[in-house]
Length: 403
Ligand code: GLU
Image 1 (cartoon, rainbow, N blue to C red):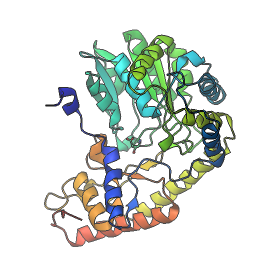
Image 2: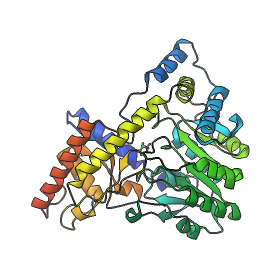
Image 3: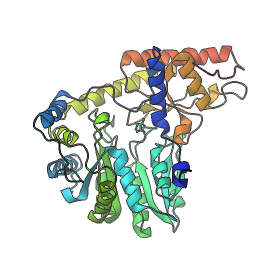
Image 4: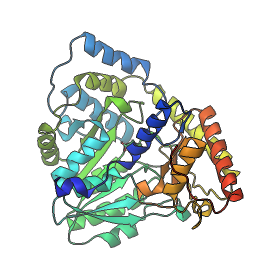
């Protein structure tokens, strides 16, 4: 028998799509993968070189659990340069991706009897981590009609005396929506009055496409310095998903508790990754801007291609690299009933991988990652439109099984 904890949450649904793509590709099928949430660009050459030189220079042993001092200083310098907010290296722990930084935080902050507010549609690991920490998830919904805006009023309504923390993700996965400085300020003031924490997931912070105010670290620094945690990552900004490097920044006491959790789990992030991370954060930043500009063009092109199918309704996202269209008009009780059915049939019949909205607590939607080449994106959207046309012609058809 397994523990109740192990049975409490399903495996990461965002990772499952990648597994399925790998399985089909091994059978020689040309799958267009718009499922995986990861950059298609290689890690920039100067960052790879720093990793290689760490290996050749024998920088291959344990490091301090929280990461080497130089990396924690580089993270602080980045936030000072980008947001004008000062942090000290002791406020930082380096973890194996933003995911582990968030997991450490959930373990260090929450327990039985606590409630944690999250927003949906949202990344599935955020509520799963809260549940693994024995706490209760309270979900605030956002809606496509107003661009999936997180309204402070809705979060305030969800507060109870048991609210331990609010998890805010901006830009959001899967919606790409940005949380406004004003909304966050209002949420932070409520958290301040009620003794709650704010966990701010900024993993997509360098992928914002328009010139909009998004200095959320400063808002928290001014409103709730004693109970705010910022989580960031190299994965998306520097195309470094496989290197596994993220961080949490927060009050020393919380960071010390995260250190305890991590010291009994994985210890330090790979020493080689840490050297590459220092180069990423302190070296030339034009690679970040170049990738962001490419994503912006892809977003606009895919939106235009999808617009030709009026039953796929899509909000223009302000950040991250996902589109999150409503496809409910393509579903029917006697055909593909759910977005999960739709995604499965699309993969098996049209060989396009997308992530169903169910993974993000939003049935009726699909997540399409545009972190793929324009040629693959064009071919993928073409296949999606042809699949939708065929659905109309063959109305009443049930989803097929087997590939
Ligand atoms: N964050 C990415 C996604 O949403 C990677 C998968 C994961 O780690 O959940 O697809």
